[in-house]
Amino acid sequence: MMLSIIVPCYNEEAVLPETARRLAALLGELVSREKLSGDSHVVFVDDGSRDQTWSIIESLARDAPVYRGLKLSRNRSHQNALLAGLQHAQGDITISVDADLQDDLSAIEAMVDAHAAGADIVYGVRKRRDRDSFFKRASAEAYYRLLARFGLEVVFNHADYRLMSRRALAALARFGESNLFLRGIIPQLGFPSAIVYYDRAERFAGESKYPLRKMLAFAWQGISSFSAAPLHLVTGLGLLVSLGSMGFSAWALWVWLFTEHAVPGWTSTVVPLVFLGGVQLLSIGILGEYVAKIYSETKRRPAYFLEKQIGFSQAFKDTDKSS
Image 1: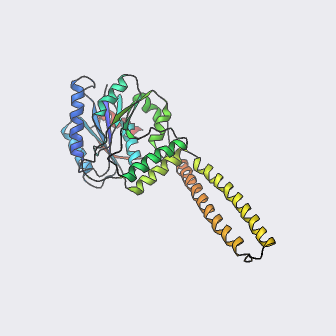
Image 2: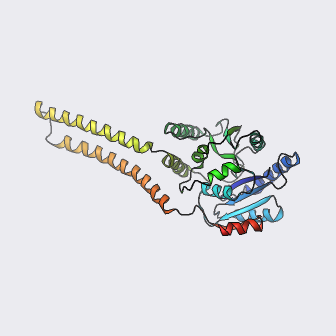
């Protein structure tokens, strides 16, 4: 089998040379043991980096045929960069892995073995989160449980470290969504799958490309792209508010009719206005998020544009231009 390892990169100049060295050594070992064909390779996808990432990729591809590179015309997010790599992969199987060397590369052999045993998709799943801070561990686990509660079919503690067969990639290509959340899309493909557990290490060099703001945005992307549960929650909240308003009105009427303690008009006007105004703004905001997603989907804009590529055959380049 020919393996294409897909590595999305964004400002990874500090770690990229070591990542390339380790991946090439791993491929060489698996080829020597006849688990992979000699034309197996690594595809680095530069997601519009602002440092020397693409220069390093070009240098690697010129020095050794095991390396190939794709450069997006601008930053399009990790998911789109990963999609670009998957769509341009030429291998019989692909494995996507982050460039920061936090994913245990020794799990790649176990993934290849699981595919040989019949799995079209093999998920890399973290054994534990003891290296994470308490906040990150608690928030991540709560997020996976929230996705499951909302009806999303996701693999607990799985990110984007996975193997996919050519058949699975062909099925993925039929999804034309602009709002990408591959962790939610791929489990829907339904092909035979397996799980390989691994320990996640510290980042080798550089800094994380997912600060809290981006993590929250990505979390909301996953929920709103695959579940209408927030809309149902807004409906339920509206029902509760309506019932509460009716109860409050009944209480205000009782105070006005049977006691002398009511301040004429103040409570019955201000409290419902403030409460209902907040609920309405929240509801409109959630509805607006869904309308924005509908808007972006209907425009059908391309997920990315390729600016450069290196290491691919001329036949592949001509096919890519014609598409």
